[in-house]
Structure formats: C-alpha cells, structure tokens
Image (cartoon, rainbow, N blue to C red; front, top):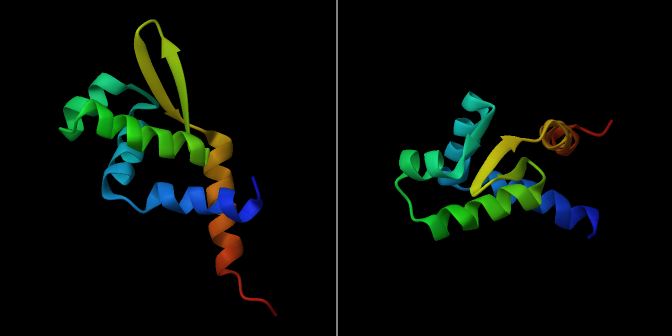
Length: 94
C-alpha cells in the first residue's frame, strides 16, 4: 500500500463522529471489550464491526481475541504516526 493511501486511512478513521467516540472510550479504559462499546454507543454489532475495521486498518487501534470476546486498545505506534502525519502536513515549508 502506498504512503498516501495509508495516510488517508488515518484521516478516514478520524472523520466520523462514532469513531471519534470509540477512540475516546478506548483511551479512557486502556482496553475495552466490543460488548461495552456496543452498550455505550447504542449501535448494531455490524455497525461497530465496520467502524472497528476502519480503526484497525488505520493502525490506530489494536484488536485481540480473548476467548469469545474482542478486545480493543489504542496502538502507541499508530498514535505517534497520526501525530507525526498531522504535524508534517501542517508544517510550513521555508
């Protein structure tokens, strides 16, 4: 995947109100179960799966299976990459 496409995935992850809420919920808990996200967001399981797919593909979120539960946490590397990407895009060239 080319760098522009990967960078676009990061911004796609941030351009939805539900995904911003999901990131905030994960941040508050360090790691959170999909079942908790479903309760807090009042969305369907398929809608949550769609949002989580985008967040995981962007590199911002890590997914792991714990028995039958799906657990999500923020990726430290993904967060650093997103910050660096935004800083780079906003830098003025001298």
